[in-house]
Length: 464
Image (cartoon, rainbow, N blue to C red):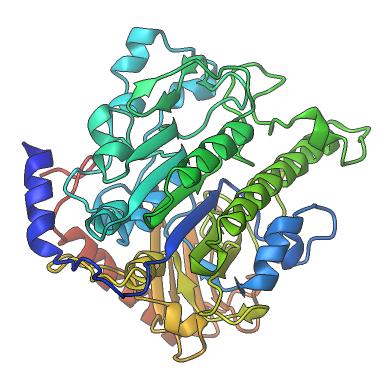
């Protein structure tokens, strides 16, 4: 019933025209998401130790966004904000769908897992995903990789406007067994599958992405390609847990280390490089199909990197609201629309991607739905300044706000007021020197929080 009501609501809200004869073909859209990749972990962002030639080429052929934020410092709420165009606090998915007992070595039985929060929670079915808007506009849509927004059938991508799904729906898995702490997790369509067990996930996601693109000829495609690299492996084996898994071919590209941490970092770099290679293969296939000029490509990390990542020059990392947790690398390429080789330092966020993709497809945003971003394509074209002047974050009691160049953080890892124009490293707390600025940011945060609390209630965490 909820799904039928959702479909009816969307049909009423989103009036979309069908392209007629002679109209320019709608562009393909390729949205690529890496997992826990550090801000500095790309050659195009200044890293000389990690090999990312294809992403560096993407940067050279498009625009590099250096002042780009996601909606959370953790994967699930960050992805909910990206795919709905709404703050996690507005769409209801502001926390992880995760079983915490694995932190203490507990292995769930099949039954325990089937009724656990990680298994049964999901993003509110009333939310409208980007895939649903594009589907109404004539797109064929595929989702490959990490979903993270609900595992039950009703929450999976094929019930949210995608025509194809292959990947896993929880927060992380083992790269080879595809299990999450012992629980099989790879899904093909709407069904769990162990058919590919033993094959490295990046290879599988490349295979499935190519299959989807090859089958889309004659119709504009929207592909969300969400790698699990370079997230740590979800395995209870102490030799694997907390590490990033990589294949021998790519490990050999980096020198061996005589320290345990050095070997972990070697594997992290190898996983990033293999992901880069897969992205290159997919982009080359699009070029072979004669679709390069008609494809909008977007790349970003879902949040900042953890301990093995390099977030420099930023402070902090994943699960923190210092810049290293929420400012991420982002690349955008659209031949003929975006001048290649640019670096753009405008204040932008992942909330801008939903409106940009809809506008690029020649469609309109659904009416009567509040969106928290804007179409940033004119900014990337250099035609206008960014509309964004403020951004707010909240996660597990930590709070942060950015207003212009000023940033306020109140968290378990530290507090402070920072002038990002002069102090991107967030080392100089100006709370005492600038009490009026501190009051302004905390006041605006309180106003935002009130707005989120008064928004139309969305599950699964709110009481309504």
